Image 1: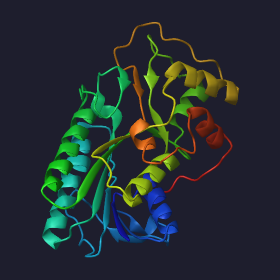
Image 2 (image 1 turned 180 degrees about the vertical axis):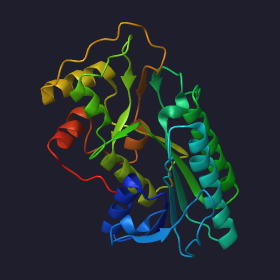
Image 3 (image 1 turned 135 degrees about the vertical axis):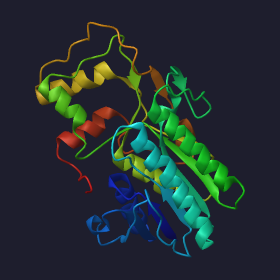
Image 4 (image 1 turned 30 degrees about the vertical axis):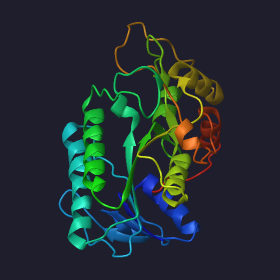
Length: 284
């Protein structure tokens, strides 16, 4: 099988290496292809301007783009413009993959709180969720009239080797617990990469949408307190003022698990234990 990964950063590279380990050929598009491991065929691609030629034998497309910054302009340039250029390139070069996966985010659920699954209402309240939802619809609508089976993967907050922002906040004593506390969804990078490979290669055709999260939505306060104890850092304190930011969601991975996927890190406890032990490497 020939796989094209458009946006071959940390997550895309990890997925690419797993595809290769399973015996598949992988082409990775990114602006700095020299940073990719030798096992992947790197191709220079700046999807802010144009897409390279699509290999004629591509069986599976993975769109795993990332924004240059946290602004609406950066998000639109990456997720909307970039995705459109990838799809335009398929049309231009006459390539019809068997399957196509788009890496999205649980940010599309916005203010929705409570038990959350793929059928929960998408109510984005910030630009990141709004843009991601627009990009999902663009991706699905453009491929709906083709033989390509298109699926969207809504990832929880991704963490893993080299992703130290939360650890840095806890270590410095600046991780404040919101008032009221809220449950959060997360996924280890390796489990997200494994989900991509699993859905691309499994026998039955995948569904249109999957939540890619671990087994246990956990309150933010529980997570940072446990990390503080593990690192010998100051115990995080509850914020004095109520916060309206974020939603209290319990995201379910039941649909993804039903396909046969299972996370290697079922909760944040196992995942962060591995990170603190120095296991794994972030891909440049």
